[in-house]
Length: 216
Image 1 (tube, rainbow, N blue to C red):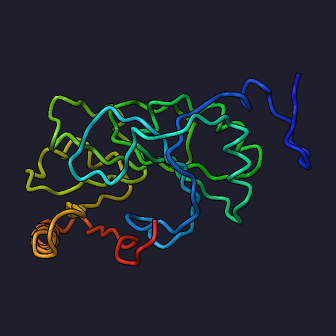
Image 2: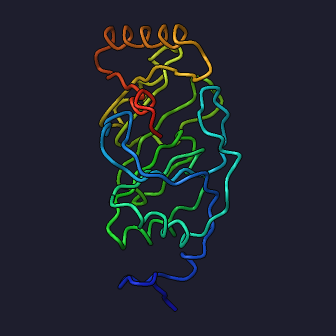
């Protein structure tokens, strides 16, 4: 049996609509970093992660279990057709129910992932991998291709990404920014990363412009 959201001509499998996910927040903002900076998106932030990065700005252990129907109703409130699954680590979830529901309604689906979990073919329209093996060398990167490779720079040797580099259309280095640190501390990391990009011009610099603007 199929069912639909009230007021919609689209029908959905009820099993998809009742699938539950750990949700930290859902909000509408502009992408603040990387290749799509400045483009409005709806951000669906999932709870839970398989890594614990010191610079992470998300409390991914605090979340609410929500059904796909609940998630869809929040998404429909925004005048935007681009969605980013982020976290936490969204690849820990079975995203196919959300994929089916949202693609039927014309949404473009992107993901920001640490790459430690391989993504199924055809699940997403845009894949951004932000590897954390500079902090967790035992964590093998399994998603080795996509649209965007975005690496947080903490002084690591960039040759560690040589095998990954060509699998992506866009490659970025991003300064490590920690909100609890001083302006001077973060400023030094910005300057170091800018110098490394100038010395390694195949990389582009990514900055978290949304934090400068004071938006999510």
